[in-house]
Image 1: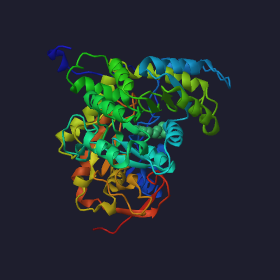
Image 2: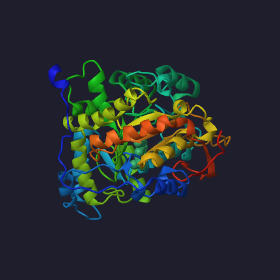
Image 3: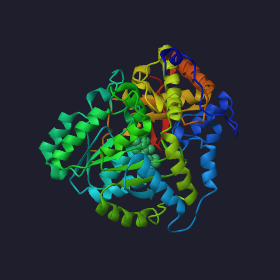
Image 4: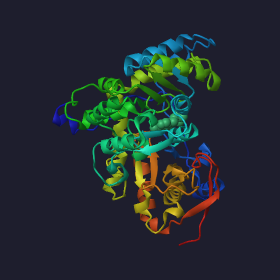
Length: 465
Ligand SMILES: *Cc1c(COP(=O)(O)O)cnc(C)c1O
């Protein structure tokens, strides 16, 4: 692209042929709805939401090709044609040899954790993810964060905040012994850090180090195409490399992958475990029949596997990924211009509001991010999600809250669903809430479930501080 072209406006690379009406209910109704939901945006009814930025998981708009694929579902219990299409797509675009379909990402996490982790093991990773970490713990392992320190600093402009700190990793290996480390979990475009990428150079170093100790890399490839896009934008030597080739190269540096296809791969449900080791694959194939379904569908309908095979291809298309990440940047840059504290640099799948900085009058025990998410909903019907102390959960041994550095509200952008006009409305609402921030009071737990508490907890308003 020439530099004169780069300054021109761009638009979504599709036109819309089916619409789903949305509506905004009154402010009074929104206040009632959020109180009824226990101030947890996960407990709101979708019909009470105007613009839904809760998550980019399973919320994508499928293409006409994918819908055509849905009609080609081969719903045979065993050996569905769609399974073979999916396995071919995984091999072609990601390079992994063996495929075990699962109903979504956590199904794959469950299987790999049970197969590889033994009681007392340590699993290093470039920041935790909620379901990933829980499955590691349920298998008897302990998660150890080996991400670079910059990842925990929302203001650091580090271009690759998902990089692994190789000293932290090697320290852990030396302290615990390589035999206590069944694998390292490497996520691309790290969700909990704000959708931040790992560089190819760093991944290559991780590969070299882990090979020396005989430790496999399991890739959380949920947002690999988004990570690849950032590598193309920011890493020397990749400016002219197609995103699909970068994706392939990333995968080639790892030994296997868990995938939540509900993100990058543009489907509403689905996931898989992909492996290169045949013996491990046989074990996973045997385990999937216990928890998910037969090894040629693993919890997905045939039609879903077909839509996924097509979605994988579309996910690495240059125009698609440019517009997808571009829309997130568009919203993020507006908020930066408005002076709203957000995580820098703007990530790939959402804009993360720095609730700690926006609500300095609330202590972390008053759940600043949860409170901010509730206030944003009341202002405009925009639904967001807490990524702070509530999401971090409790230490299973001491029972105490984890106190994460980052106390964030995530505005997650579904793929191909909203237009730039929706982004303008969101930015204006965030600005209005920001202007009114001194009047936002805190919350406290009213009900707290044992696992993944952010999904189902209920809160009550604490007294005005
Ligand atoms: C969503 C997600 C998962 C879990 O996948 P599900 O499909 O929700 O089960 C795992 N890792 C990351 C990084 C995710 O974003």
